[in-house]
Amino acid sequence: MKSLVCMKQVPDTETQIKVNSQGTGIVTEGIKYIINPYDEFSVEEALRLKEKFKQGEVVILTIGPDRCTESIRTALAMGADKGIHINDESLNSADPFVVAQALAAAASQVDYNVIFCGHRAIDDDFAEAGAMLAELLQIPQVTLVTKVEVSDDKTKAIVERDVEGGKETVEVSLPCVLTSQKGLNEPRYASLPGIMKAKKKPIDKKTAADLGITAEARLESREYSMPPERKAGKKLEGMEPPDAAKELVRLLRNEAKVI
Image (cartoon, rainbow, N blue to C red):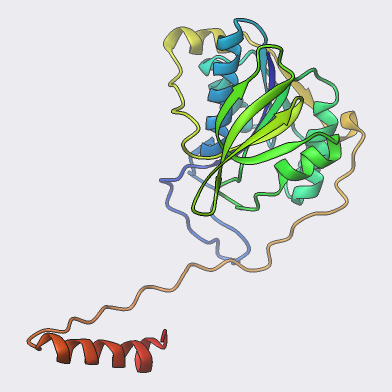
């Protein structure tokens, strides 16, 4: 079973985010970076499929600057076989479509039965690259996946996905793109032997020119601001329940203006 996992490096969810003095972005000094949590589910599921079929390969595909090598090594330490690192400054601020183009160009150079992506990245929250990637490769896709069962002949998969108010079961032919949702699995920790082996596993470096693409569309952040501080709440004390209910409705209507 051959899986290609599209992975992004993002700021740690516990990092304290600060806006820079120009208001054009965040302060990046001292930030710890991690694998995007939804992509971690993708790495784990790819590893489980390889273990189920007792053969195959898990390839990690990442776009980003030099620091992304650390996250690729983390995925390799978990058990992935090799990495592809697209490191090109012109792609660092690319929009999701250009990102999908780069991923598609790299994917076309490797063999795969399934491509896993996180359903969204926790930094920009676009949730677009996976769908665009499938369209560019002209293969089916299923989003928000929480369960994957691949047939023994590797021609199709039965997947469960989150929908409004419940779950939906879908049969999809392979190859396909699956975007991972929380609940798909519990990602493993890298073992010490895995960390040692990861140092020797190959990471293929590529540029936009190597893939035959140009970053014509770029994102520009014009203004960043922190959310306003929450105002202190009000307590209705020393009132009978009917009077408190009336006062609450009045406050919600006249002050909060939510009803």
